[in-house]
Length: 222
Ligand SMILES: [Zn+2]
Image 1 (cartoon, protein in one colour):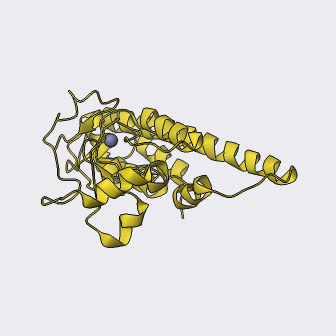
Image 2 (tube, rainbow, N blue to C red; image 1 turned 30 degrees about the horizontal axis):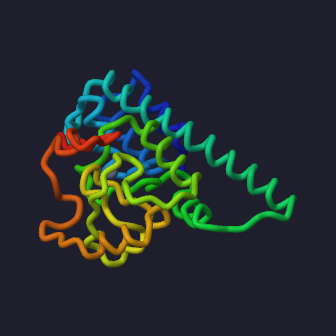
């Protein structure tokens, strides 16, 4: 089965029809999709100015979307390599103690659903690389917090899917599922109590995070 780089080469190939290059970009997302496949696709389309359903998009926009994805992937792969090297060192020195970070790595290794979004149309508006850097720094710090590491919001909702609830609550402003390992016990308890009549991930209108002091607000463009 072809890998990320082979599909990326197809996205770049000017001899291919735009529709085929678009399909290749979607295939890249089967290998690397920090928000999950659908939310990452929506994010890239929004930032590159592609209508998500447009089967024949402007190739220049496809290339812009690919560039953003590749930059994020390079950052993530470098982080994974660093983690592997660190683990080896710790093991050798006999100080290896698996913790919350390991559980997160197990879930996110390879780069799919690193910071999943509960709904495909609701995700942070900032570039993927900026969001990944922030989440990595938050996880690495090991400090429990009461706010979303991506946007700084303190409003959380429980996930509507009971099978996934253990992963963490949904940020009501930027839409990411915040890893439970990052949040204080009080924050998790408050999120569980939060009534969510409209369902997680369908909250706040577009731009609602803009005035909340958020670091990276949400994007909801169609
Ligand atoms: Zn957030």
